[in-house]
Structures are given as C-alpha cells and as structure tokens.
Length: 370
Ligand SMILES: [Zn+2]
Image 1 (cartoon, rainbow, N blue to C red):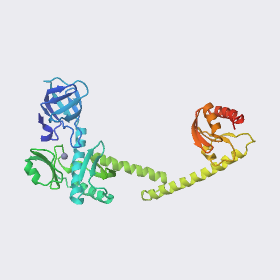
Image 2: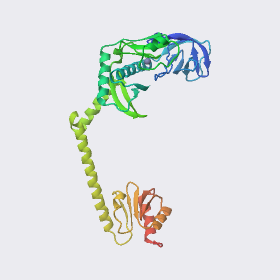
Image 3: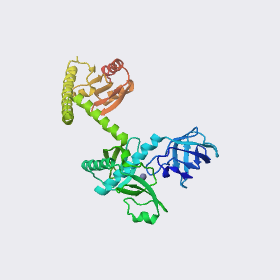
Image 4: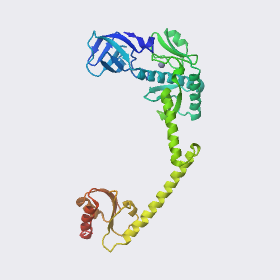
C-alpha cells in the first residue's frame, strides 16, 4: 500500500481500489488517509459512496478504512476523498504540540511524557510536578514568536544510526529507518504523523490551563481557530461579568469576592430570622402537639427541643422532635423517608402536606405509647 499522506500531507484525494475487506473495514492499494497514531486521530472522509468514519493501522502495519455498514467488495475502484477540515485541524494541533514540547524542553528542561489531541484543545503531560503560570506564559510567547517567524516544518527519513546520532529530545520507538520531523532549527524528533508545512499555519497558540495527573503537570493548549475562539469567548465572559458586577475587568475579582461575602452574610441573617420565626410559630401553639406547615426550612426548628412537634416545609422536608417509637409509627403510616437520633428526626415526605399533617395529627394526638 502506498501511504500518500506521508509524501504529501496536503493531498486531499486519490483514486484507489479495494485490495482486502473484512465486514465493515477495507484496505486500499493507496491512500491519503492517515491512520490513528501518536495522539493524532484517524482520518475521515468518503470512498466512492462509502462514508469512512475512522482509519486505523493494525499490528502488521496494514491501514484499514472503517465504514458504517458493509465494506465495498475487493476490486471496487473509486475516488478517496479526505474530510479536509477534520484532518487539517489535527495537523495543526499536532504540529503545535511539537512546537510547544520543543520549547518547553529547550528553554525550561521540561520533558513531554504523553500527549492528547482533542476537538478544541491538546494536552501535554510533562515530566515535572510543578510549573508556574509565568513559565507557561513565557512558552506561549515563544510559540507565538515562532508562528510570526513562519518557520518551515518538514519531514525526512534517515537510517537508524543517523537518527540515534542526533540525540533527539524524545527516544526513537521504531526499528529500521526513522521518519523525522523538523521545525527549522528549533526541533527535530522521530514522528510518522502528518504536519503543517510551516508554523505560520498555526495562527496562534494559547496556554489555556494546567492540571495534576499521575504526579505530573498536564498542560492544556489551544491553537489556530480554537485559540482565537477561546480568546473571544473569554472576552465575552469578562464583558458579561463586568456588566453584571458593574466593575471594570481589573476590579472584577474584588467585586466578585465582595459579592460572595455579602451573600454569605445575608444567608447567615436569613437563617437567624428563620430560627426566630420557627420559635414564634411553635410558641403560638395551644397545648396540643404542634404540626406546622410553613415556607421556613424544616431545619430551622432544629434548636427547638423543649417540646414535641412536627414541622413541614414547602420544599417537602420535615423535622420531628419526639420519641423514636412515635417516629417509627409516622414512618409506617405516612409516606415519608428519613431518620435521626436523640429524639430529632428529619427527612422528606411524598404525600401533599395537608394529607401528611392530617395523618400525623391522628397519630400524635392519640399517642398511646408515649
Ligand atoms: Zn509529529
């Protein structure tokens, strides 16, 4: 099979014929489709009228085009057409990952452990446990400088010994001849993936976030249109928050902090007021066991331990203060769930409040066991 994607990463179609098939996958005599590998997903597209959703390489190095239904018969000839948007997106992301990994290694001695390419971002798991944002912003700056210089990216293939003698930042994982990818004089590594032809095509690289994984820092990046869309998205979020908090972007954090503190204080005051109201409701009783329905959260009655009562709130919660035996009767005869201890029980009720109150009153007023 001729792997045309390696000779020309920009070739979008070729004529081909089916040489092998297996249910829904088939092999062509030549292909422009890149098979999944090195963190780069397999290509998609069409062969004649057959939709190809994925391309994979098996252990023998055979490239399989995976279609939705039955694969075309051996001997079928047709035009193989790449989903170029999909391919080009990953070509740029993959090349951007090479560039960022190279810069992290040459400027900060940070190695790359694993990479992943996603729909709108790519990740680089590093070999270190801490990296400051200032370091990653500096790498971002260097990456964008390389983009402005529009450095050439190219591939070649050399003998294994020659590749070994280059002392590359990443170990060589293949035997025999080695495919190399160069970014001007910035980087060279062994890679059989598909790459953009110059750094200028990457448009923009943005450091988006970092996280901890397996004791390492994993950095998250965006490139090209995704970086632009992310920058615009962030700008929109800041504008919306600025309007919401009536604060300039540089005062936004302080405004949000103030707002959160104010909200916490209001919540504290509301809780206090609810407890006072709960106490007033209980104190207004006429001597019977009070069964109270209110908008006050049932938990506001928690401190009321002077007498037996049942409080229900409009959110479907209840709180009961009384004996465990009475609570068991309530549980058996009313449609409620819950539990507790020290004569304080809470939970939720299913019936409507009136129904629950009527049944509960019957039980509590005629409490034989108490
Ligand atoms: Zn590569």
